[in-house]
Length: 380
Image 1 (cartoon, rainbow, N blue to C red):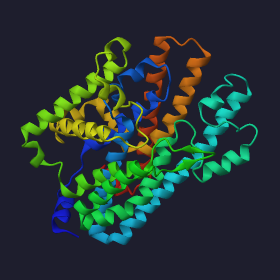
Image 2: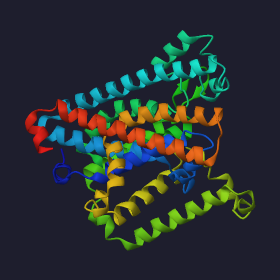
Image 3: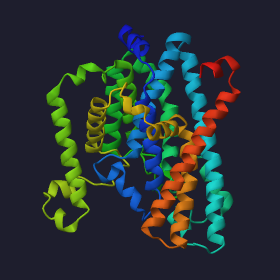
Image 4: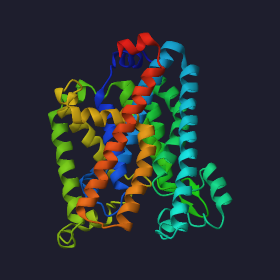
């Protein structure tokens, strides 16, 4: 292991901004998954090229590299790798449980004729005629029901990460270069994962692995530290890019304003090009992260603000909160399409969902403390 990597891992301390980012991503995913909801107009994807998925993948890569990189230093790489594979199993188990209950709930609602069109809306056509086939294909990740694509993506990315971590701990720059090469090759030759019968995954793991490795690279090299903050011209460039991205994104929503955009902005930049992780999307996310970490240092007093603490708690328990959010988004969608879809109802559904996700996060955190040894509970 490189001495500089060992030093960077040892110097890293708890950073609430990571959990805040995961919490924001969880809340954003929840409201983004409720169609025709006025609240999702406030999420990141409406003001630039990147979105909540980018936050998830990058921050998980950063966090896993820190936690398991330190574990590799203290107990060896084999131990760290096996702990990551244990996380893979937990992700897969969560996905299977969520998949089975989720498609069963959708099928039940459709069979009761409350909203039969949701069968096709949620990408599980054939569930009533061939439930066993859908179940088996789901177990081998060959089905991709709506709103489960991000959790599905995290399974192969996390399974791949022990190998990436081995390289990051020894040759971080070379490992990142190899990751970028795989990203470029996948975009060039169309490599991707497939779903039944002839569909492609919403998120291409061959491309999105680069964002996760990039998060790990920043973690082990300390590139996100004070060195970059001493470059004012880089902040100005990042700020200019964010402003331009926001202007293009907002103008594309208006037929009148989009007429003033050059052809390269209309044809070369697609707001839906998330499958293969477009380069301008990666640059936008990095610019956003760079500006955000400059404006909000790790010791910023605002991070102790009570409302932000609730979001941070949702980030700390991100997997359980994500799973709950999937069901809540389905329930919210059902409420809005079967009732009066008024703006006040959309806001109310969103707020109730946020409250429920926060309650789950606090309960799980409390439950974990009760299972911990008494000495640990007293320190907490």
